[in-house]
Image 1: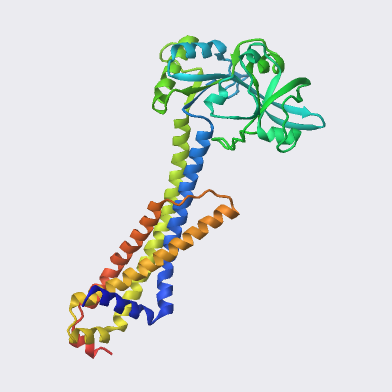
Image 2 (image 1 turned 90 degrees about the vertical axis):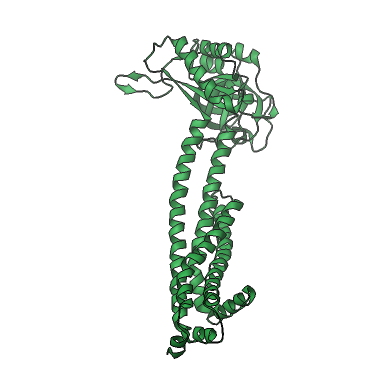
Length: 408
């Protein structure tokens, strides 16, 4: 008996009881659909994390001022005045791998334009920030070194701020806005950037020279800053550059060996690793649940195949009396189990795609469909069919033809 004939016989046997066949495949359909959906959600979340991390800038290193306590209350990271403009210059001078640097001083305030107002983040920074974060200016220009040196009252708006103060898509270049009753000229509007690595809206920001925040908004004429944003010269050099920055800052601050840093240095790698581990843990948990569904589906196939062997005992005996070998019977039942698994797997893949697409459209959850997930689902479905179908097939192949013909 050829394989083609075996497949035809197996398909006819499955077609004789369509409802039972469909119900048997249902467990496999649900299991494979769950696998596809979980993998799509996990991969989509991973890509979303990578996109958010990349949107913050390339080869990014962040330095934050340290913590200090006031009356027993910890003020948190960035609270201590431990970073200065001299630190920025020392890093620029002594760390060749630090390609771009931008000092940072931020605050939050109400901003007014004509009869509109908006509460937003005021980000005091330097001229190299757009290079660090690969962020284009949509209209107008970013401020220049002379604006920083003179603490000029100029501002570059994020697109969300522009939309709320001047109207969606408006061109506010040359207009005036007020921050703490001081008038600022709008130089430009940044291109939309989207959500940042920690969920913040990067477009809901106004960028001004950090010296302007120090002198005009905070009322301080000192050199203290709250952070430094740095771009390493290559992805492979991020961690070495971060280590060099740490060494330079410890020397700048006179911190003796063994004493803790009074600042924090963080890289995008740290953030990516943390978020990826969280995603992988959740994906693994969901995949485990989906795997249980597949196993349950496989057990269902085995149960139905065992029932089928019992129901078709006389048929098996007749076939063997007419010359069919044990291996032919084994192959017939094994093919039936594999067909149940594969057809259920294919339908499950379609259902998984549909569920994932629905989650994206209705709940706005990011999903991605890697080709290896489809191959994995099909391969796993076939493996389940072979594993759980082999025992019933072997039981059928071992039946004695004479006893089978006498079976009632």
